[in-house]
Amino acid sequence: MLQGNFDRDERAEEEGTSCRIGMLLLPGFNSMAANAFLDPFRAANYLRAATAYDWPILSLDGGEVTASNGLTIAKTIPMAAAGAAWDLDFLVVNASWNPEQFRTQPLQGWLRRLSRQGVVMCAIDTGAFVLAQAGLLSGYRAAVHYEHIAAFRELFPDSLMDESLFVFDRDRLTCCGGMAAADMALEIIRLQQGLDVANAAGRYIFHERLRSGDEGQLPTTREPVGYAAPARLRDAIVLMERNLEQPLTIGAIVSQLGLSQRQLERLFRTHTGVSPVRYYVDVRLDRARGLVTQTELPIVDVAAACGFGSAVQFTRTYKRRFGLAPSRDRIEGRVPFQFRSFPSHAGV
Image (cartoon, rainbow, N blue to C red; front, side, top):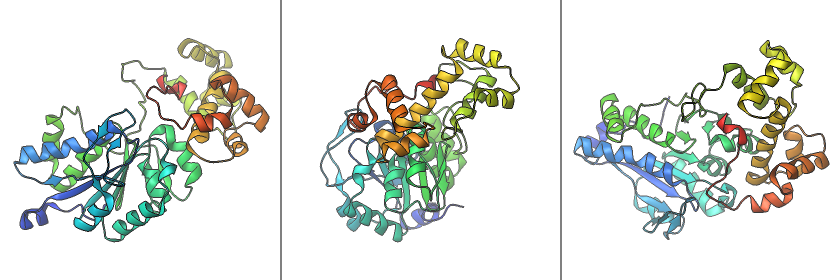
């Protein structure tokens, strides 16, 4: 059950106040998610002909903030000034690349203080890492972008990582990012203003349907372009992705699926262009690259977590796949760039 300042509507109308949602933009933030989250509230205000919501844009120091796609927000409010001047109902932490750089005492102390004051703490994309680093997700369910799930699980085992679009757990809201941020915002509107307002806001911004937080991040039947992979192939990939630290044999996979090894081989060759063995190695390497570039885990621990018998074998395989050693990728892979293409199996 949701707690905190969700039930704002009656009080807001009585006092003539709006629900205040502070959006903290950290350097390299997710621009699409920021817009997707805020626009449903703009639409709700317009449709109700009232300022039911406002959303001060915050930053660490009040300066300009640049998103991961290069978009720069010039006018922001310092987080300290915002916390002192306004009674925030929600705080949304919007981060993308390199969330570990925000493990600072001033930020963590500010986040904890807001939490103690009863502010509903929210996170978009890797914003969950920032909340977890401050100790604010211990014992909570949480969601991050699928590319960062493995890293989050390794770093914060006291939180329950969820593969859903978004998660509401008491006074903590987390979202995988992208357009799912609009679904999270519409759910807040639904809870506060009712289904009719949420539906009207969704229709106004041409959001095709209100997705629940329980929906998975990756499509199970149809990809965005309409392509659908055979169910047996998807089942095989799910088995691989759930058994990375101790990889299954191909024999074990076909036994669980009720297929012959020849049938499985044909499925992978037809739809992925590679063998099941090669595909499985690539899945493990994709996870490894996430851990290498998104955490500070020792390389030997990354190798073990991804099912490689030795650091030497892991480094050799990693370099063959990505063109550079994990230790070097740990440095260069942390530099944001626009067209990252992994995980390679995401388009299957």
